[in-house]
Image (cartoon, rainbow, N blue to C red; front, side, top):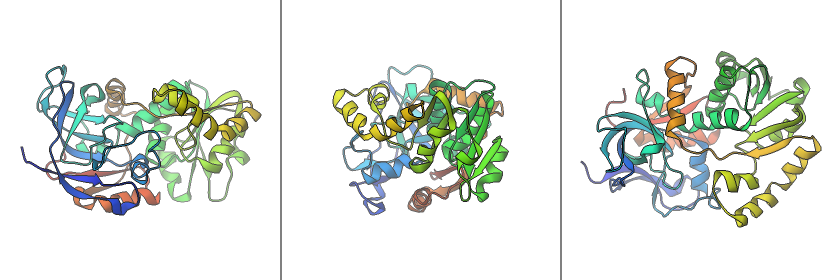
Length: 342
């Protein structure tokens, strides 16, 4: 095994200048982990939010740290306590939140966070699934409890999470409304959106009311407008707003100090939600190999089709990150490592 490996490393918190490709030691798996030869890795907003220091209150990393939160590749070695995987298996995973490490030639993954790769998917397409797919699944099924006949609003439907969310909501039997630019309308309609709000010239409140739930991927004014769209007692789940106390307790397993901080930070949003008679929930998704296997089955059945915006080689990851941060991607951005990506 080569030593060292090539990796995209964060040396400090700040702008793009604090990250660079650099040699790093190949990680050693624990008894519960897999060592994976990474073939492709997906990019997500959490990557640049981590780099900027926006999420330091939630998770601090020992620097320098290899970045990246989801991957697809081949198992090179299994820890002594690992069951259900073997050397040579094709897998994909959302890596542990406190570790990162996907933007590298090799990475370690908790076995419980990994799932076998759908046979029909190449590595680059599979790497786009874990974080966005799990986020959409957990928000729609577990938090909003989407059921047949419901009407659901998903803001930002042309993005990475939005593409999965539209498809999953339709699979769960809902009617879906979303926001998109004129450039993204064809995509979200192809994914199954029933109503498309052109956010460049329309407001959701001008077209929507009495909905059963909302999944916010934009934050800001779009999130605040979402509360007025819902039936009394319904819920807005956001991944782009401000964390609230449940986030600290349920998603992060943290105690009263962080819960109190989130209580204060989210106060205005929770007050606005109460004025409209609805609930507000901020979600930090959790890695799950079992749920990833569910998504894999839906991909194999043709229910879910990952949407890829663009694919970059590892040596151009800075360009890929710049595109991600500019907010123009339609679907997921993926990087590939040297070698076979089939």
